[in-house]
Length: 150
Length: 190
Image 1 (cartoon, chains in turn blue, green):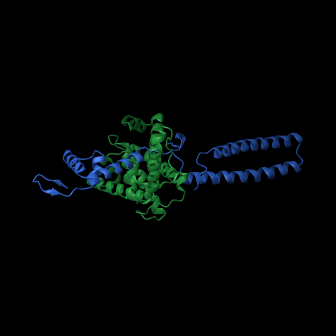
Image 2 (spheres, chains in turn yellow, cyan; image 1 turned 30 degrees about the horizontal axis):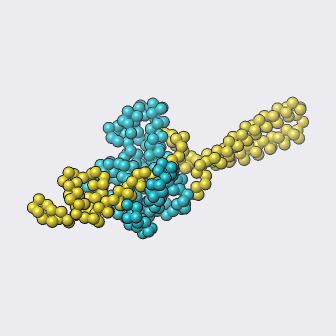
Image 3 (cartoon, one colour; image 1 turned 120 degrees about the horizontal axis):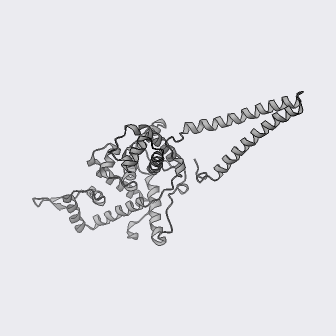
């Protein structure tokens, strides 16, 4: 309880403790809280508890994703899904087409250098594809958040 | 966040845009983590908000602070997400991930003795945040994690200034109640 200008006892509004903690009160309300704190042990205890909670929250350090994650055109779930689907479809298409071409060339009547040209080209593309795949697997293995269950 | 940085980003300066994206992305992620408490969801939510942030950047009034505007976008995106998933707005969090898997990282070596107690309270605060309703989590995230002023909080939450203190106090008292339910005793640590 505190006194108004006429000396009447007024009930203390507990919300003022949060405002006091945050330094968001007027001079008059700050004075009211100070007077109340001098009189009330429970108010002092509550203020201290609120202060401890706020300090614990403010000092929490949340591990954030790396800076590379943030770009002005970030990846949305839809774009990530379409990228994965496209990558899988491309892999299937390349395998089928390469298989058909290689089978045709191997069983055909082309000259040896023509066969070597086709086999060499497809082997080169396959190696490039394999290296990209290897990089992606390595990246996913070193992902800091891979252990977090979805 | 510096006004000049926002102005440069609006003019199309690539370095300023990149720096703004990183700062806003990190701030949005931290805010989202308190709201949803799941790294994967917070990451998607903050990326989504960042995209929207840059779409609306040309119409942004640079005399206003950036963070309240950014957090308002995050909040709106979360509301959209919950609408899609038909989650009631006031519902408490359901932890799909065991809390030990995503507890915030704290510098345990800065002050080993004091940090053990602080870390315990930090972990309990995070655990109990998940039991609060969204309006309470939001206001605690904005004041106690982001240190926004009451005026800025009123802007983000679209509520009168006078409501901020009462809602914040109610949220803190709810959080305190959950902490006490876990068996935590403030008195022993004072």
